[in-house]
Length: 407
Image (cartoon, rainbow, N blue to C red; front, side, top):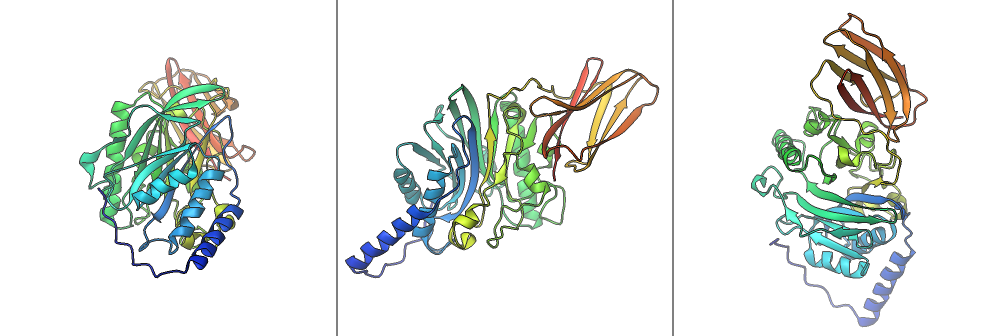
């Protein structure tokens, strides 16, 4: 059970003043209009580190104001499922659920110390399958005392019902070597679990990863999550375009120009419904709420959208060892993409690039030649920003790579 700091002894407030203050607070919260992100026909999910939520000694100085702002965001944003981090007061979490109303429910970790992780979800779309599960508890040190929390859900949308597994994480903070290695080890443990227990499941991992993807915040070393990035046939970070464009999710000021620390990771089973370009940070909150970084949180929410009714004729099979090998770079790319195919023996090769709707945006067929390697550079300046699949077929072998175009 988490231990909480004792609340300071309040000074008596005259009843008339207390009622006036409460009225001002309620009217202020009611006047806050938060943009709607979600839609009725899509699954919209987000992760939000709500800085020391409910702790009067840490984070924003006005707990009541933070509470009302968080409630306004969750009530109005239209997000079906929130992964939340830094929940410091379980009673405030329960009160938040009560005030959100009967359409919302939540799950809070019981083994995360002072900064708990959890979920808040719209019960009209999300229903739990069974009980929440604390996972990887044997690696408490690697996960900074906050082992991941997992829920299995049934997602009910107007046109479909699917099962999705959600996992939220709050990785070790700070930019020293030890913290970096703990994140790296935690990432390895998480990937091993997903590889062996959920190789064909729809899985979404959301949370405060406390590091970047292109390079680590520690001395620019490879990201501690490079193990996921190196397995593009099975995993993809929906937040990768944010990271590639240096769009910060950590807010040292209201500009929120810090590191990109908050991420959404999906397995390849969730890639077809992932709406291209719909993953973003909720920057509008810095305009809705004055002094956002000091009154609400030092992190922005990051969200993504999934549309399970989209036509997805393309399901690239995972790459397997074979006669042809594929490389695509740079990744992310802007105005040009280079594709390199190595062939162990002369044979015809078919190469294509698809968008996430399964439409070919470029394709070519190469005849059998004695050259072991062939390279082509494709102009991509007119392509829309987003995720693409590079696919090469040689005989019965098929390889695919995910690449991302950024502005």
